[in-house]
Amino acid sequence: MAKYVQHDEDNSDAVDSTDSSILDPDMKTESPFDTTEADSEILLTPSVSDERTGLFKGTKSYKRRWYILALWCAVGFANFEIWNTWGPIQNTAKYTFNWKTSQISLLVNLGLFTLILFPPVFVLIIDRYGLRVAQLITAGSIAAGASIRLIIPDNSIGICIIQDLGEFLNGIGGVLPMAASTMLSLKWFPEGERRTATAFSTGTQQIGLALSFLIGPLLVDDLKPVDMANSSTDPNDTSTVEPGPTKEEMQGQIWHYILYQSIYAVVLFVLVVVYFPRSPPKPPSEVSFSKREDLLPSVGKIVKKPKFWCLAFVYGLFSGVFNSYLSILDVDLQPKGFSQVLAGWIGSTTTLAGAIGGVIFANLADRLRRHNPVKKLLLMLLCVGFGSFLLFVLSVKAFSLSLAANKAVVFVTVVVTGICSASSVPLVFEMGSDILFPISEELIGSMLVLVQNVFGSLILAAMSIPQLGDAWLDYAVLSGVLLAIPLVLVVDDTNERGKMSETVRRQSGRSIVNSRGGTRNDYSDNDTSDDNLIIMSH
Image (tube, rainbow, N blue to C red):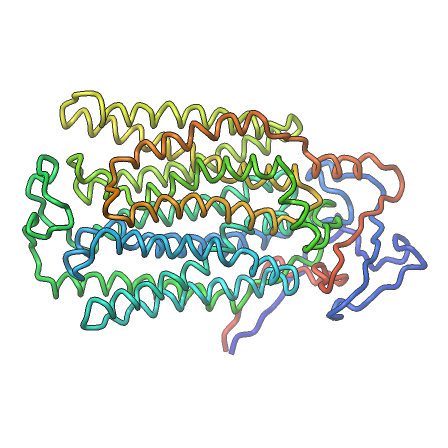
């Protein structure tokens, strides 16, 4: 039996919201255990900030926010790593299960399809029940999807059905990590850490994608190509390969790979069940507790805002298209003389470098936040990404380079483009939350994810049509980056959320910040402050 012991820390920098000296005497106070409440107004203390943290009295940052972020990131990591199971080992999977490239594309596309279908569902769940319930559903879906794939029937059709179902369930678990990272940052982190926290969340998703390019080829043997770069033979024809291990041995390797994934996913689900609170007792900043518009009216408003569509198309054309390309990188590079393992190393390096780049650029945006730098940073990333991928296309389509030189150019250009793509993700989400305020962060994130995955699904759907081939793929990625550049230039980047926060800071005396309405009370009036949580087993 587990027992939780909570240690309080000095709360002198935070004012309890139940103090009668700072509450409107006519305001009705309700129990934190109430399941429904009317809209209320909470009076914060005078605009006096702590010199060390820059936080207002009445707000508080909890040390456990880093554990919450780590667990959130681990779930996102698992989702992306499981989603990209088949791309890096597609040669072996096709040979072992008698699949075609279209089946690999379908498996990848199922994950993207759920990211189009389920964001509205998770927005409703968050709005009604909060982040804890949404995270439980997310971790549970990932664990179920990973575990069901351990069932491998004796026939090819049965294998396809089971694996498709597993990918579908895992895809459901991908909605929250992608769409609500800004919501988690808002709930737990002060203003000077929000973009960095969002970048950690999106970055670890990319790390999961990166390691999938390494783990898969390391655990599952590749086939031995017969000079496929100089052969016109259909890559789906297994006569072009000389397998080392037998099909049964390869199937065993794939099964053990899936087993490791399922164990990790189940452990994460247990950790979420044990401790993942709905929100901290006190908000980390005044904007965290400010009123957001109601959900249904916000949907109508967001679809009518040109600046949303500009930003969403930037995200879809750049990150959506490039992420889909990266998931089938092996398919694109194999005819160019790249082995499955080498393509895996390129994909892994690209996503790992992108995760690091995302944190660096987000931290830079945090440091320069008073200068509203996000639009300029996005424009720079797009221009560099376009130039880099243009060089990639020229090297494989136009230049006559030696195989070694061509591999070097491809490696560098894909990695640089990937860094630019991944670094743009936290900037897009935070910029959306800033310019579309007071629309809720979870709705903005969900809509961005929906649009992004529409673009990604179009790429993978086209790859599923055998008659189209894949010669067009490189040009599609290049065109996507190019089209995104003018959209960034015209987007209105007025920071509405920052203006609200600055207004509160400048108010003298008591500043009124409306708490979020609806049927939930995300912040408790009683701060039990369990910053250091100890689990003692008996």
